[in-house]
Image (cartoon, rainbow, N blue to C red; front, side, top):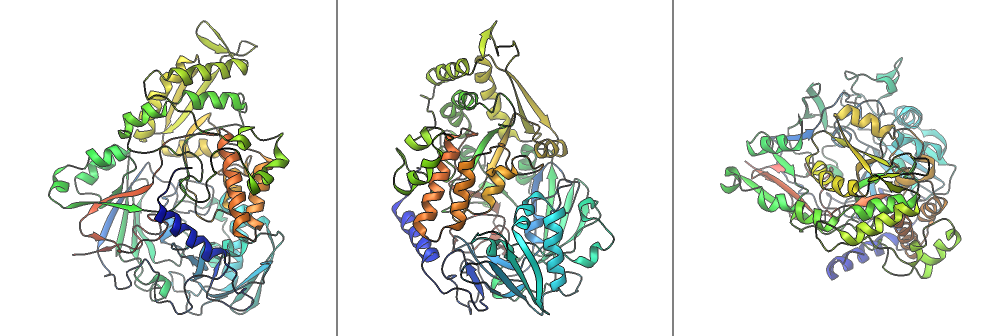
Amino acid sequence: MVPICFSLKRTLSTAFAVVFMAGAVLSDQAHGIAMYGDPKLPPDFESLPYAYANAPKGGRIVTGNTGGFDSLNPFIRKGTVPWQLRFFTYDSLMGRNRDEPFALYGLIAESIKTPPNRAWVEFKIRKEARFSDGNPITVEDVIWSYETLGTSGHPRYLGFWKKVDTIKATGPRSVRITFNTEDRELALIAGMRPILQKAQWVGKDIAEATLEDIPIGSGAYVISDFEAGRYVTLSRDPNYWAADLPFRKGTNNFDEIQIDFYGDGDVLFEAFKAGEISYVREFNAESWASQYNFPSAQAGDIVKSEIPHQKPSGMTGFVINARRAPFNDIRVRDALIHAFNFEFINDTMTGGRQARISSYFSGSVLSMESGVANGKVAELLSPFTNEIPADAISGYELPKSNGSLRNRKNFQIAAKLLDEAGFVVVDGKRHDANGNPLTLEILLRQGDSQSKAIIDIYKKSVERLGISVTVSLTDNAQFTQRVNDFDFDMVNYRRSLSLSPGNEQNLYWGSESADQTGSRNLMGVKSAAIDSLINTMLTSNSQDDFIAATRALDRVLTSGRHVIPIWNYAVGRIAHRKELQFPDTLSIYGDGADWMPALWWWDK
């Protein structure tokens, strides 16, 4: 477990105590809902605790993406979409408070109702809720959105729909969703689904939407202009129906947000230096320390802001596709991890400034503890001793090197693992018993200069083992298609994790999603232990049981050797124009798509 300071531990412990404390059940209409206990904010809250309610409106900002886009519909599998659209242009029934592990408050819905066992959830829609074209949001729109996204939408929506028994109107502005599965989180997930306009899609198949078929939303911004592959312009809706809701006070302050697209990260950074982009997020500590000394930064026109957070590390690195032989052999995956000389790569890339991710939930109270599993964690793992790696129970740690280029000790371990897996060296190349060579294709997106630099170092180490390595650089569309089709041996990987992990865990590494085209289970893991632990997380009624299940899951995932982890992003780094301001009060989740630029403003 990555050490965390006392104050952070105390803050997290307090947060979880609030979330898991016994509270009133939502047997009557309520203004909000928490995963456990009562939501922290009262019914009459004036604004989110980390928002500046009186933030000025106005200004225009430009942000940059790499690659391109061929769709403006973020709700279907088809096409490549600017990732920002889901967050800025569409509202859901409820919105998330980033200062609680998992709590929602009314947005399109003015209230929520659910029984103690959360077998169903009922929402009451606000009279004033409107789409951007001025038409009211109706119960019919809500029902159509859930059914359509659950059957024809992006895979991220399919798992929830399978757990819905019925969805029906219970009044002119009320809709009830009844579940067929015991799962405390479903009532909250239901509140986070985007609501689309049914009338727009009469006679059309949303799954086959073209670039011009932009879904009508109900969010603070609308798409006002675009040029395929080059830019998208979002304009703040002056008639946005929710602008004065307490949940929206101090948010969505810019009049215009433009998203420009660049071929790679280096070109994007040059555009930022030239003043063409308003801000960039920096993920490399060495670059943060050494690359921001250009003239506008020295003059004070560019400001560097660091944003702390209390989130788990999540997992960043390179995922190995276990659907394909021989990568379904844990010894081969373990060899590839031992060949990754993290200490040398980290020193080369970041100057050794960024610590390595040690597990999926590292840096939080949900992280696996070092050494042998005990107590409730051991109890949860004991039925699966014949399935999971032995060191999931005895304790697993990533291999470490002495930082030298040769990585001699770990190289010898990697070679031995490949020998045990049946891959012997013949004329300098590894072959199986049938004489087939051992090959590895690493898929990367064009323009991903950081991943390319890492792989250039790693490739040499893998080739020393006698493995033939191909690095395939593809454009944005081809990369997305190949990842959706699981057409890779290894690919760069990022999974952000929250302080309240839930149903999304099934999307990331549940057995059912492993063979579902376009799913987020890129590693292709199918594990009864993982499925069981996720279910225990979803049905836990106490803090202890929930944390134990998450720590057990962390052990199984990490010891499964599915990903080669790189460094942890323990702090958010944003370089920005000096006119861009943000609130002094920060949430426990720090930076994110629904924080920057949503809570920032332009100060003339």
